[in-house]
Image (cartoon, rainbow, N blue to C red; front, side, top):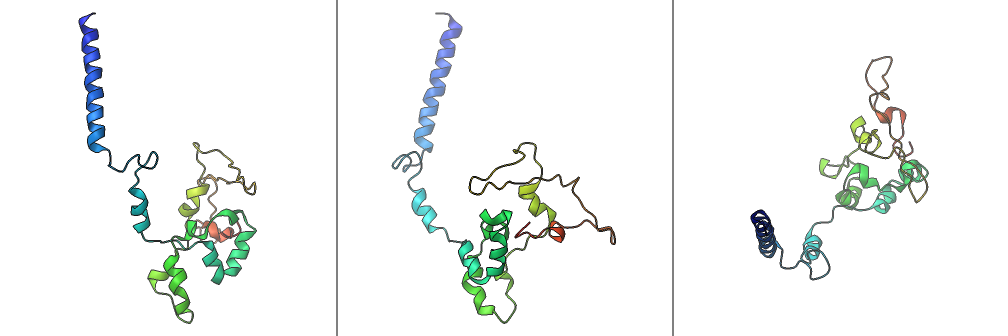
Length: 169
């Protein structure tokens, strides 16, 4: 057998042995106990605080917006996709019905073009129209550079919500 083949086999064997040693050293002890993942991840994830309330909680107080959203293209989205985690808001906002909510309970109200563009910006890597299997709606993409309306009076760029109702676009 030629010398260079022996060296190549020796190099492959060394890499294989190094891989097996590293696998023994680096693999968590709970890996593989319940399938191909780390079993300790289950109790660790249970310990994380819950931050989301779900759209059903939002509907309890914001029925008018939920009704608008229910017949629009965004009907399949959870409220917290755009407005952020709402568990604290859902739990404590009813205590401030007469007054102004503290900042810690206010949810985000997206009104910038970049926020809508997270899903709707034209992207060459994304399929142009993505059909939703639930209600056959589609994700409409726009080119923000071409679709960039300007207020003729002030010459300022308009926000998406100036023309589109985000709950029923």
